[in-house]
Image (cartoon, rainbow, N blue to C red; front, side, top):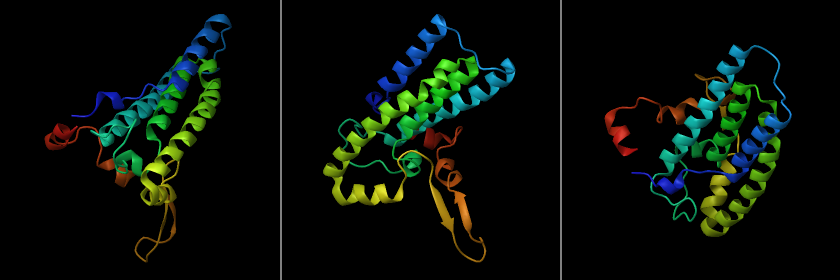
Length: 183
C-alpha cells in the first residue's frame, strides 16, 4: 500500500487555480473557440496530468517523499525528476482549457515560477542527502520534461526520439492483477 501522505497538494497550483477562479468570477475571460473542442482537448490534458500524478504516487510507493530514505528513479521518475509537479501543472492547464477559463491558463506561469523555486530548494536537500547517487540521477534525468535519448545502431538508425513508451508502458492502466495488487 502506498503512503497517502505522498499524494501532493501543491499550494502553488492550488493557489493559482483559486486565483484563476476568483479572477474569472470578477472579470470573465473566456478562451475563444468551440466549447466542445476545448472540453475534449482540456479533458485529455487534465487526464494526462491526473494520470501522471497517480503513476508518480504509485512509483513512490512507501517512500516518504518529504523525508526520503532512498531516491525514487523508476516509472515517471525515470523521465522527470519532478513528475508530480508536471502532472499538477498539466491538470491546471487542462482544467483551464476544458472550462475555457483563460485566467487558469494565464496563472500557470506564476505557479510554475513558484514551483521552480521549491524544486531548486528540494534539489539542494537531495544533493546533500544522496550525494553521488543524486548527481548521477540528475545528470541522466531532466528536471521537468520527458527524457530524450539518442538511438544508435544499424537496426534502429540514428536520431533523437522520446523514450516515453518503454518507461510508462510498465505503468499502463488496466495492468494485470499482480501489478494492481502492488499498487
